Image (cartoon, rainbow, N blue to C red; front, side, top):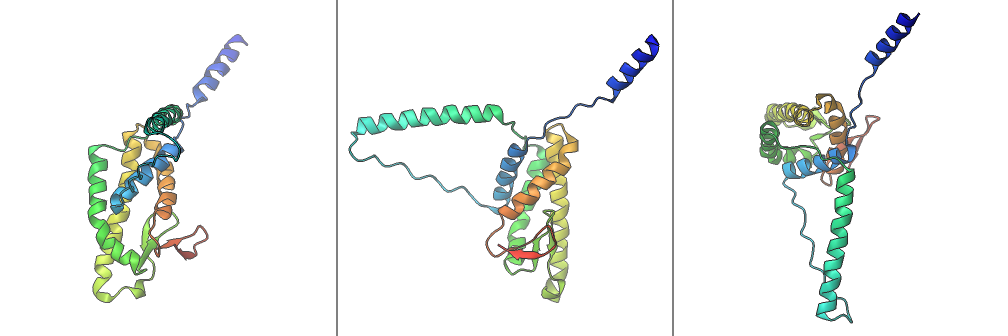
Length: 198
């Protein structure tokens, strides 16, 4: 009986798996950074704050220093709570460069509604009949190359973070972020399959 209990305990211990936390917030931040870089969107510089009325230059400067120190402490506390996602490796850099080089051509087809974002974050020819015959081969090649690079990118990010099993979660995160970073007028597919324009 004692051996049976020991064997049961060992069997139970062997079945225990370690769940590794997927940093969803960090993945969204990384996705936004990568997508904006690919699209050539640069963050707008923040305007310098203007002195408040009624404060001397010294008082105003003092409040700016205190505000900056408090913001730094809050940012540090949030950073300690949130895990960072590694998005820099030779493969990731190569894929980002390839996608950024392709983007100007894709943008023309996004802008005229010939291609759109599928619900899963990959792209597709929205209406093959709307694509002029002379452009069909080019559009199909661009779409295929972009989708292949997106798939590789998600796996490369998962691999760079030592968790290849995260590729599906990274893909799902990027799907939402591609849609939210789409330019005005672009088409995206909703979960029910219907197309909607931003």
